[in-house]
Image 1 (cartoon, helix red, strand yellow):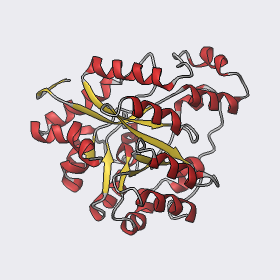
Image 2 (cartoon, helix red, strand yellow):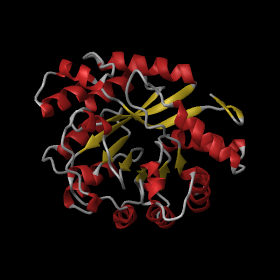
Image 3 (cartoon, helix red, strand yellow):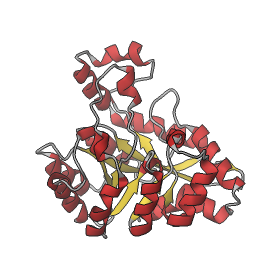
Image 4 (cartoon, helix red, strand yellow):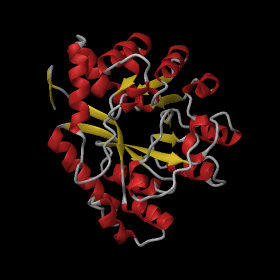
Length: 303
């Protein structure tokens, strides 16, 4: 990938794998057939074979010079789609799966998925499924995760807005009481062997995310998306300020570049890379540190 530093290897820590199964589950929630989603979304829906979607993502990433990406199964019950993609292209993908600790089968499903060797992180969305991270049901999943020393916990904090649900006019009864990164403090201390990833710099809880990362060396910050949460800050900040503060607190080794790409025909969201690389270059980040943030940190996390 061409960057302000020249050619740069990219490993993307945040790509949603919107499979046929994903859309089928959403269609079921809306009470329509999956093919009826086409006119509602105006997206290119994948066929039933997740390997074909994996082929499409490999082609798309090749077009942009992205060497590896973390694929997120973005609805509970869709881990098999990502597992199929990672199994076919283990050199190109890491696999993440969304879990819902309030489901009585969650721990068993997570254990089976992790045992496949193709799932590298469990994704917790406390506001979406309405539970605190200190809940015993979340702890049960972290216990499963702790038995897999190379796996990580991805914990969404802050503002949660799911675009596809809005477009389909599906209800989103999320509860932001469970969105504060501070809720992870005692949890991360209790599980020092687990690496915790907080996306979007905390999604509006930037100060709290920095406090958490400062106190817990096993907490990483994912830089993904447009970071529109900056609008909520009392004083105007931009990506340059965000990166300066994150680097000052967490250091370059615990920042993971993510694009938050998701659907076709848009494909890989190169504008996110352009904005973040520009901001980092403007604050004087060296090529060595850029390589850490945009590639090496994610590779080291799972190796």
